[in-house]
Length: 551
Ligand code: GLN
Image (cartoon, rainbow, N blue to C red; front, side, top):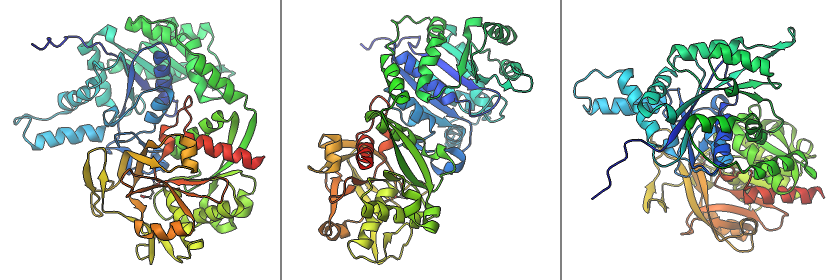
């Protein structure tokens, strides 16, 4: 006989909302809370609920939304999931990121199938029930689930999510749910003091929809005095020791330590009635010490299209920092516009950099400049790291300038190229599902990408193998185009090293140049798997090569 299903879930929920304005670092706060709870031995997970109507962020312009973060299972998610994974040991996926669009999509599909039996389908209860179902999927697997609501209190769009989390306290019980509100306590220069009014208003708004926050995380430039905490606590109906200063820090990896110093994790555990031992924070202390006191510095150039908006290269930026940590070095990043390189040539713009990185990207803008940067790195023997589009363009550059294939190109930019060294592959064998995957050129937008984790076998005596130190790895993908095997022999004969392939040898995953201090392009996105405590091997090796180049 099967044991009766337990009535109460063992999972406790932390709901995080944001007030006053966006960009207060709610995602980082959620990640840091996760880090603290994990350091106390608790099993945790995360979820991000985004109020916008896009079904997922896959089709969104990185200018508007920042990076699209890809998980092992191939979900295209909000960049906050990147923070969650980097700060903890969790592995996230499809069920850890929901948008309004995705929730509505499910409800509308059900309605079309007649599953509501003729009833009127409404925001409450149908949309809210679907949201609660999404949240409660996390039940029973972890001790604590941290659920972050995107957007700011007061947005029309986020109301169904807020109503759903309000109901969840009744459904799950007071001891199993807490609400943390991230707010701003600005310093007003002319008055020479910090102001609590925006926080009061934001909490008032939250209470108007039935949510009384248990903890306030107050973003501020300085430390809040006890007096101010008293005031905020009184006006917002929050216990005094639940008013937490979240002051600006020099480095994002200091946040867990600052929260701990403010007593945040103790307060959370008390409210949730969880007993744990003391947190083990030494790894965080060591990390911060390393980041703050590097032995050396090394300038690295990132050649991009969205150089104005660093949010679109979030994981890449972090992975480079981690690569620096692995080498006791501070990586100084220079975002160089590919179009500037095209206009001015690479020599001057890249002269001071000891490593050149061409990241992933879509569309033809800036491609010519990126190729010029790759030629520069190859000829001047500057360490080069090409990621996804960067790998594809390194292949194109090599084909054109070394293998003598003039006009070689990716069919993404030149469908009529006489030498399509990067092309649209129609089918491939998927090891995850043990099935042949078909790519449709005319499929729904985004439906034709190779997404998520795939295995890659590494050849001996290559940069890749030396960096990873193992024969097989799994890395995450997000691209439509692939290396064209028809040109493989020709390019290899000309000196291109193919150091990583799919286990059946059909998909080229990594290319290198032998006659170079470090030149590597990979079809996957290694930046998604780098964590500060476990810097990604390719980033560590790239930064090491850049340091050697600097001498
Ligand atoms: N645009 C290229 C492709 O779709 C590369 C994508 C990327 O860099 N993520 O294959």
